[in-house]
Length: 277
Image 1: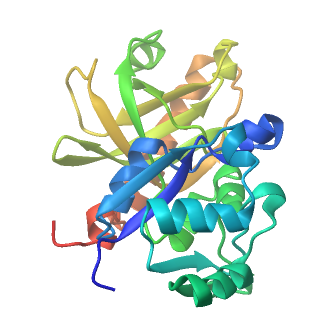
Image 2: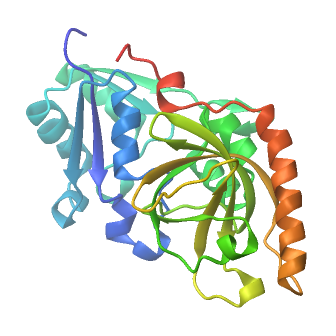
Image 3: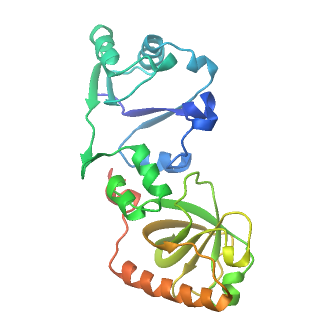
């Protein structure tokens, strides 16, 4: 085409503005989206505000006034089920017709499927919420991750002999409560870990907690940002009769995690999206 490659996206997600109760939880934070797009050899990321004016804009005007006249689009790539414009009236066929007389090419991507199912963000969200993180990796082509800052907790894990880092994250979409084998990136170092998402029912705690125990690690992590890569779900969250049973279960979790993680490698952003950066 001879020009820069650009991604045009809306902030916030249109449904968060139009129907917040039906808006999907986002798989990636805005920061993660920027990293992924940048790693995909994209030169420009356009984050357009989605407001009432944009919601009322007819599809043909969006193409002509925004994409062609403002952005200078000459080649457009969309998915086969892409809908846009007021009332979602625009589709790939409209884009192809408009491209013929406005002078831009349209490339429509066909669905990607495997194992009898179409890969989609809806399916990926479902798998994440079910805790099937190994299958999420198959569809995404990379491990599902979250970035969390280590904050102070109740130090229950330390008292049990398994110190944990309590994570505070901006991630909207989280795997279902349970225990997971994970890889944790701390700076340039990647270490094995066991992560729990849940409500600590044994201690009758309130609120959702995310805490990770780093295997063979001894040190302070407060204030650090950790990137967690989900590898495998180990078990559901359970309520134990006493702390002794909990300690025994954690020991079994660590044993299982060591076995799984010794045979696992994570796929990071730059591993599967290499733009020579």
